[in-house]
Image: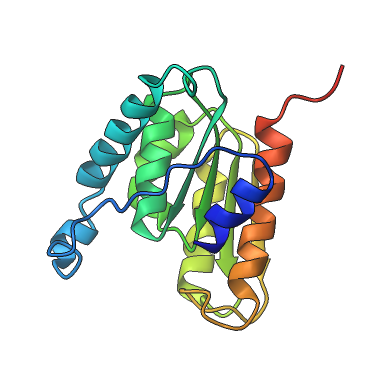
Length: 170
């Protein structure tokens, strides 16, 4: 919610959706079913594309944990539609074979105390063939539950989308 609020405050249209139903969240196979998550994210993108007021806006994707892997997969599959991706504590390594297909800029935000995901993101960044950045939130763990951590994620996300989605004044 903090990220969505920061994006709204910056003038972005946002669509916030859960990729799993309440009953699916406890099923670990569904949580790690990246094609399922990506299909649902693609369906949301299709809905946005069907809205006359939203169709022409530049589109960015934001995903956390396995949702970030889904965002990477959707960006790889929709290179003409997706202009930026932000991954928060993302398991982008789960779509390692698709990383080189991504054409839009990718920001990976990882907690400094989340050693496993930090190392996985460093390795994944080497596979990307697009503009990318890795931002580390000092002291944050995987869920960014520490005081101020989500505010920092929101700030980093807003700034990335301002840089990558908003056309520079001519």
